[in-house]
Length: 151
Image (cartoon, rainbow, N blue to C red; front, top):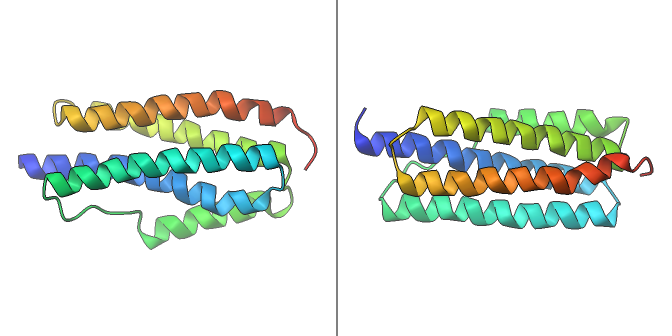
């Protein structure tokens, strides 16, 4: 595989991880009226957006034109999962649990992507490391919401 193609594949993996998180938050934030959770999710969305922008800036600097967001099928699956998961239970606890599961999936994806793309780009490694650390911290910030049984 050509060097630019390797960069593109790695970059898209990171970018799609951030875009999945952003879409998840956008889909789920309207399902809660817990102000503290709304504030946490908004803060997370802002940071994911910054990381997504870093990917876009990298693509521009490297003249990578095929930066890909998730396809419509993935977006539809995510939207459906959020709506099915909150149809009967919009409690803070359930929403926090759904976000935690997504965050764990994001962390797993980071670990696999780092291993799959060893020695491809130290700059992309740094963006991925930021994403990984951010998601690890999100777990600690979301866990207390599991203790809230009220809506």
